Length: 98
Image (tube, rainbow, N blue to C red; front, side, top):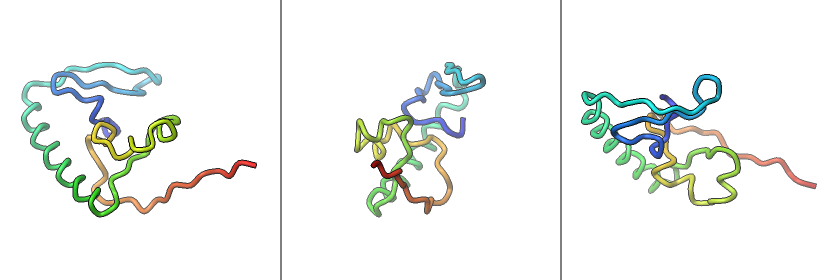
């Protein structure tokens, strides 16, 4: 669940993308986790808003979605449910075309 994105998480079910065998599946979210998870996501979103104001907060998108939707890497639904505790210093790079 460490690479789960917000769009995969509904507070009743959780979609697991690219799980065992490269398959997607849906699992149930226990009732006892709903409120703690909701409170956690509020804190994550607040931290993300600060990151965005400071010029951070982008995520890597699957496949070629960054080309198709250039602003999607900053949208809430693409953010990870469990983001890294520190900002990454990895820079994006591209392969030159000839």
